[in-house]
Every structure is written in structure tokens, then in C-alpha cells.
Image: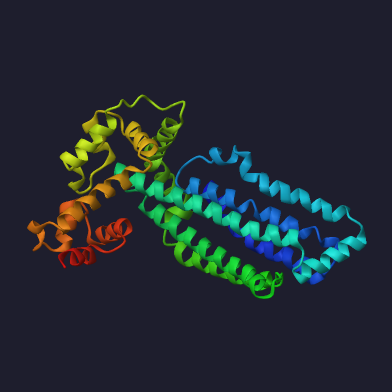
Length: 358
């Protein structure tokens, strides 16, 4: 299973980094100075590999990542820079080695910091991919993704925490002393590695589809229509491929939500709205993404929050419980109502109601 191969690669980065650090720092050999940028260059492929794993665990193809050479340009540049440390004179190697050990070598400090920010950038992309995948599956009523999405979010959360810890271990000494402490890697990296491995053993085995080839095959077949739909939407979002929506598409949407209040229907799906508009779900999704700059899930929640705000301050609804107003607005649970409302308004429905009552 390709997903497990990429997961193994992700797991391998930390022990490889620790091993290269030990060889470089403990042996204290100027001829091994090239290992510092080499180690960072290798780790700069972590982000693209992580993105490939997320694609595979969602049942997608990774060609969109592997064909884009820009994902690997930073790694190639830093790897190429390691040859500089092999070609310079021995005296210069010894001088630079002492600077690296003292945390005063600007280039090494800079690419170390860039590495952590680079991983953070890819973690942000991966998190957005998972969120879009989850929301699209919800819109289409595909329930088979629940276990996979739970694992993806948990796995990314683990790496986010690990990256923050490594960033703090590197940046805090620089802020306090003005110099990087290279030996902090020898402590922080193993601690992070142990945490990741414990997490994967404890949490990962709960989701058999992640490791079991037979179950993954069943999962991939179940979500194939979802991934085909997402590919179709991505194609329709390209400027040269966008269909002619017509000037009245937005007006029709506004009428459905503002006049007919279809968002108050619990469990409203993208397909339901597409049928009413007499367009394909992919065309509707692409229109919402490109013209309204939001997903269908976000659009529905926007209208539901507007409805909830209206009901919360309506004199006719003063005796209604907040939870009931959430139901009238289309939310299917108290938790989702409170979470979405607070995200949009900045306060809970209860606080919002009390403030307007006063």
C-alpha cells in the first residue's frame, strides 16, 4: 500500500536527522561540515512527502504533487549548497565548523529556521486539504471518510505540536542569548520522535483502514466518486475551463436561501441545491468556490448563522431555548450550532441573546 510507504518515509526523517546530527556534532570533524546542509536539504522534502501521504490516505493520486517540481526546489538548492563546504580550504572548513558549533553561522541558522517554517507551510496546506475533503464529503453525504479524516487530523495535529516544539527549541535560545544552540537538536529531536511513535502506536492502530491493505482497498473504492467529483470541481475552477454560469446564478442562490430559507433544512446537501438550480453538483460547487470565495459548507453555515441571529433577537422567540433556535436555523446539534455561531459572531448564542435582551 503506497500510503504506508509514505508514512514509513515520514517516520524515517526523525531518526535520520538524529543520526546525522550525532555524526556531525559529536565527531566534531571539519570534513563532515557538509552534513549540516545535507541534513536540512533532505528534511526539506518532508513537506511534499507529507502532502503525498495525505493525498494517498484520501484515496487520491499523488501525480499533482510529484509533477510539480517547485515542491522540491528548496531541497535541491540546499543540497547543492552542501558541495560548497566540501570545496573550500581546510582552514575555512575549521573556522566555519567552530562558528556552526557556536551557533554563529548565519547560513546554517537561516536554513534551519527556514526548514521549520517550510514544514509549517506544508502543514497548513495539508490541514486545509483535510478540511475541504471533510466538508465536501459532508456535502455529498459520503460517510466512509469519517475514520480516515479523524486519523488525518489527529496525525497532522501530532506533527504540528512536534514542529512547534522544535521551533521553540531552536528559536528560544536565539532570542535569549542571540545565538543558536545546535546541541538542542540532540535533545529536542529524540523527545519529539518518541512522542510521535507513541502516538502512532496508540492512536494509529485504532484506525485499521490506515494500515490494513484489504480495508484500505474497500475504502478507496467507496470514496472514488468523491475524489472524481473533487477533480471535476478543480478542473472547472480553472479560468480556461470555467463554464458560463449565467448572470442569474447568484440571484437564484440568493432566492433559495433568503426567500425560501432552504438552509433551515437539517442535512442540506450540495446535490439538493444543485437539483433545485438544475445544474450539476460540480458546476455549483465550482461557482461557489470561485465566485463566492467559500465552500458550500461555509455558505450554508453563513445563512444559518444569519437566521439564528435574527431569531435570537426576535421578540416572538424570547421564550425559545437557544438549542431550539439552532434547530430552527438548520443546525443538527447543539455543539455544531455553538461552534459555528461563535466562529462567525465572536460569542456564543447564549451570550448574544442575553446582550440583546438587556
